[in-house]
Amino acid sequence: MEAGSGEAAPGEHAAAAPGRARQGPLYQRLPRGPHRLDRRAVEQHQRLRIQGAMVQAVAGSGFQEVSVRQVIALAGVSRRSFYEQFASKQDCFLATFDLIARQQLAVARHACSLASGGPDRRMEAVLGSCAESVADDREAAALVLLEALSLGPAGARRMRAAAAAWERLIAGSLTGTALLPTPCGAAPGALLGGLHGIMAARLRDASPPSRGLLAEELCWWALAPKMPSRAAEARRLSAALRAGDRRTAIVAAKDKLERGQPPGNDRDRLLLAALRLAAREPVGLLSAARIADEAALPLEAFFELFADRDECLRLAMADAGEQLLTIAETAAERGPDWPGALAETLPALMRHFAAHPLHARALTVVAAGSGATCRRYAAQLEADLARALGAGFPDRGEAAGRALVGSLWHLVRCHLGDRRIRRLPAAARHLTLLALAPAIGADAAADTLLRAPSCSGRG
Image 1 (cartoon, rainbow, N blue to C red):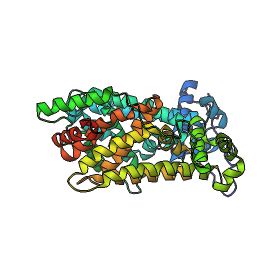
Image 2 (cartoon, helix red, strand yellow):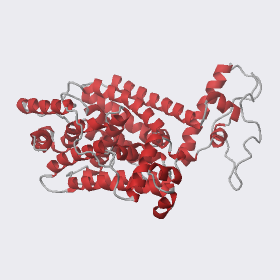
Image 3 (cartoon, rainbow, N blue to C red):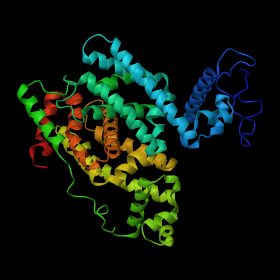
C-alpha cells in the first residue's frame, strides 16, 4: 500500500484562519512509499492518531471550540480519513472517551489483581492507579472527568455507563467488609462520586498536587471503616440504612412551579421556561423567541428583562445555585455539633434536588454544555458548595468538600438518567455516613446518623 492514502497531502492544512499559525501534526505519519502494513493496520494507526489529536485539541481549546480541521491538522490525516473513521466531531470525542475509560479501568483492575493483602490493600492499589492517571496523563483524565459533560446529555450518559463499571469494581472489592456499610445501597455510587469530585477539582487546580498527595486524599475518602465496632450499633445502623433504601422518597413539598402553577412574575416564568427547554433539547437550538413562546409571553417582555438567551440561562442557573448555597450554609457551622449540622444539610440538599428536577438537571448536566459563561458559573458553584460543606471538618476540609459535591452531582446525574430523581433522598443516609466516617470514625458517624432527624423520625 502506498503512503498518502488518507495521509494529509502537503499544503492540505495550509488554509488555517487568517492570523493563526498553521498547526503541524503531533503524530508521526506512515512511511512514504510501499510498506508492509495492511489496510486494517493503516486504519487503526490513523484512528489512534485522530483520537490522540482529539485529546490534545480538547485540552487546548475545550470540546465546544474544537473543529474537525484542528483535529486532522494535529493528527496529520486527511478530512476523508477522519470521516471514514468517525461520523462527526462528537462521535470522535465519544469514541476517544470510551477508549480512555476502558484503558483506565483495565489498569485499575490489573493493579487490584496484583496487590497482596486484604480489600483495603487492593483498593489502595486501585486508587493509586487513579492518582497516577490524573498526575501523569492530565489531558486524557480531563477529557473523561471534565470535558465529557460539555456534550450535555450525551456526555452524561457516557459518564454514567463508565461509572457503572467502576461502581461494580468498588462493590465487588468492598462489599462484606467494614469499608462499605451493610447494606451497601447507594454507597458505591456515593464513594465513586467522591473520588470523581476530588480528582476533577485537582484537574482544575492551576498547581496540581503530586501523585502521592492525590492518592492520599483518595484513600482518606474511600478507605475509612464505615461500620461501627459495637455489634448493637452496627445492627441499628444497618436497620436505618435499610429503611432509607426502602423509602419511595416522593417529596411532599413539590416546587409550585413544577406542579403547573404559574410563577408569580414574568422573570420567573421566563427563567423556568429556559430551564424546561434546556432539559428537552440542545441548548444551541434555544433562542429568545423560543423561551418567550414557552413562557407564553411576548418577545418584548423577554428583552425588557434579559439581553439575550445566554443571560437568561445564566440567571436561571444562578437562581438555582443560590438556593443550594443557602441550604449548604447550615453545614458551615463550626463547633462540636458540625457533624449533626452536616447530617441535616446533606438530606436537605437531596430533598431540594428531588423537589426541583429542572434545577438538578440544569446544574449537573446542562450547565457544562451551555457556553463558557454558564460553565464558569457551574465550576464556581461547585467550589462554593465544597467550601461550605467542608468548612466544619477539623482537617482535610477541602478534600471533604470536593468529595461531597462530587458525590452529590454523581448521585443526581444517576437518578436523573434512571428517571428516579424523586427517590434521591433515600441515598442521603449512605452519603452522610461516607462523609462523616473518615473525619470522626465509624462509631461517632453512626451515632450522629442515628440521632439525625431523618433517622429518628423527627424529620
